[in-house]
View 1 (tube, rainbow, N blue to C red):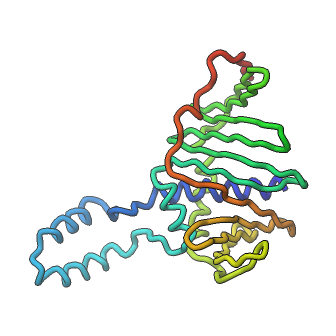
View 2: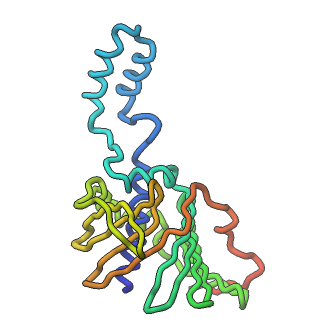
View 3: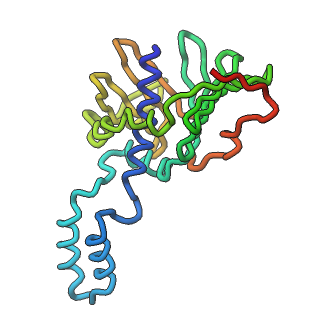
Length: 234
């Protein structure tokens, strides 16, 4: 089960990386391509079609959203700042979590059967915040950017779905796209254009994460470490 959760976290981090490399508003290809785009805007109408064809040929290596899943995460994760709330079940216990990313900072809050925990990663440190006792446990770790880099090579796995179509879950029909990551199967279930569930089969065990909300932006206060709490450093 730990591997299953790690896989899902990896998936989320992968899309953070993808959103950083793909510009949905203007193609990136260096000064030469950008100049071509500017010249295109000044070209008379009767010559535009021909030059547009040349531009497409020269920029066809620019990454595009080839799957619905990539397009969805691009929409919300572009810029690397977003907040996501999820629900899953671990060993029969419902877990609700809230995760936020901003620059090189990460916030994670979970409620597991009434037991709440808060973790913040920033500046190369991990802070476990215990609100009931007003204590903070501080440990040095790889910064969030370094953690995300661990999954950089996996980004290509999400450009092409190995399967897609319709599937039924909890009595309702969803569109789905399926990917294979390190030999494991991950499905993304959509209701229209909204991602509702992530299903993963790891070592023969199926796990499901329900996406409660996903939005661009993250409240800066989430990443603050309480100054009046007792700090214990290791």
